Length: 393
Image 1 (cartoon, rainbow, N blue to C red):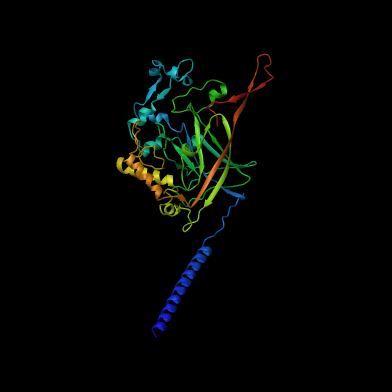
Image 2 (cartoon, one colour):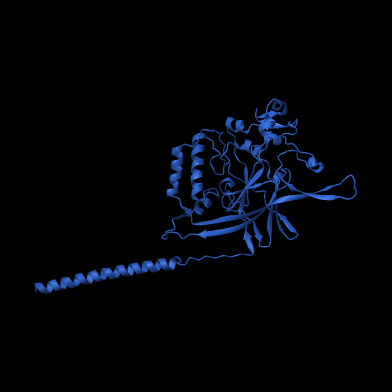
């Protein structure tokens, strides 16, 4: 009797073990099939050239995008020609002088004194910024047909700079802070032509150019005339000084863009990506969209809370007061470490678009007719390599 009970118990135990194993196997199989049917298991790489192309956002900064006359009106930040005559200014900056003298209406702007003496609020910043229409023109052309780009809703970029003066930048075709805006699309046959007029003479006239005379500047600028430009996703803003190109005057540039679009799979796949778009949409288009922006936003928020202003070493678009420049100062190291640690939480975006720029450049030539004394009726044409800062680039 005891042996029979022992055999029965052994059979029940064996059956239980088999039942448990079978149940576990079926559970794992169902889970696997559920994941298999839910998530694609094929990496799909597509290269396409659609008939209509989504134009990226374009951020650019002009080295003379600031109004020097406004700085002069805000305080003792400019030296006039009379004061400069008694200094060696022309020896140090001969390009600003003619025959060892500056023009009588010239003012040397002390940018370092201006940025180190006071913080600058948003209203002053607005008055310092040159209007976009003064130096920028954008057209979309296809054969003889042309139409203007939409620049009326351009977004102000960040003031980021690694020097002693902030930068003033514009972003066109951007959805930043305007998520319901329709972005620009162009046909494959169309091209975008952008023209930047870099005039550091501030004379607002081409009279001296036409007459062949030297056009002397009215103000000094913090750097040589150029444009910094970067193309990027329309959902954000970017700094051309971090990932862009510099374009100097006197040259014509042809830019070819290559768009790379990536969509990473969410968990349980090991892509370690973050869905930034949910927060971006919830905050009306003002939120970071990658790890770097998360860190910069953290710096921006903490600096604004502690100092009531934001250093222009912080690369995040805002409309707050910009802190005065301090040469030997830097953002608190503890704050930097605190913000950098956020990269352990926030990873690469699950969906992102990147653009690669291939830039070709060539000199601009202009033709000038010269009439000789011996043959006043027979013009001869001379071509010059144009490196003047007073012409469209």
